[in-house]
Image (cartoon, rainbow, N blue to C red; front, side, top):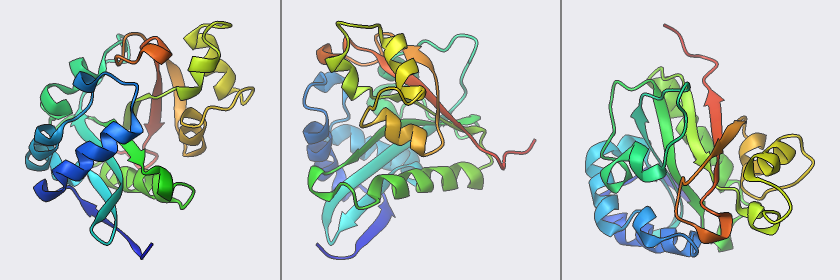
Length: 208
């Protein structure tokens, strides 16, 4: 393992991005994941909002997002519905929020600070463009082990109160996000009954 570097998405990494995506979400329906064509579209649409972590020429982490507006009075949505074609079709440069569509780190490179750095890069682009913050559908991977004992909303509440640990959601909370409820039929993943957490990070430097 060499020195890690962080760059924005370019088309030549599309195949590696798809491979890492499939590795990281093996139980998710492929139609709800970004494919190689989609990553190429992302590179054309909003590469500034898509970050890669590289070890030499090897992709070991990635984090994507687009700008859009969000209606907190009607928060329910699916990943495909809110992001559009290739999860970047609804990008709006004038949108108030950065919507996080994807963040993954290769299993062999976890616990090296890559995820934290990717979140910092996302926050940097939000500050640079004076957006209100970051919104995402948080992957509640641990819910699969608790869904027969409680609802998704109860599970997310317990994780938020630190009564339960979730490998993904707890990490997001540790990086300044708040859980603002749950999203039904967010992504097609049978193990989680298609649930996700609605998570929000508000930009403390946002100004009108």
